[in-house]
Length: 206
Image (cartoon, rainbow, N blue to C red; front, side):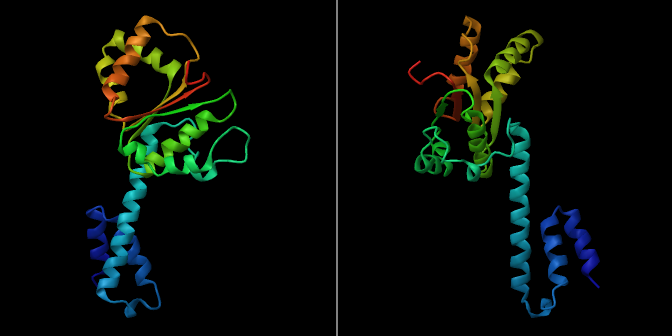
């Protein structure tokens, strides 16, 4: 008799995971064999899992990754591009994000740098870090416009707030003095506070 009112209360409280688990448990043939603690434990597990999935979806939506489906599990280590499996999987654990270190991915055009960066971005979101992806040429255009229309402080704040900022296609064009200044502002604000991932066609020494 209490099932429908209880489900309504769960939905009203935003406990959609617990409500879904309740329905599934009630339909089991062995539902009466489970103790109250087992029911509660299974319902809480479902709620926690659904909330975690929702957080990841929201973080990925905010990240605006160029390749939103890219993931660490799909990396092809057999391709001849010098990608080390052990190092990559170690980075996937996310310790570098916790210690606010940075990552540079270099290689020739077509070697999958952007895709790999998005895979790391997706992994960071899974690890509950906020992520933002931007292409550097477009970034400088947005910053120049933001200077004119008053959005510059808000845009800089957005770029410095993300726990992982992905700067894709860095170094494809020479920078003006103003662009160097903008880049300095972003890097300075993020230094030792947040992590930045850069992809570039030019070698690290350049």
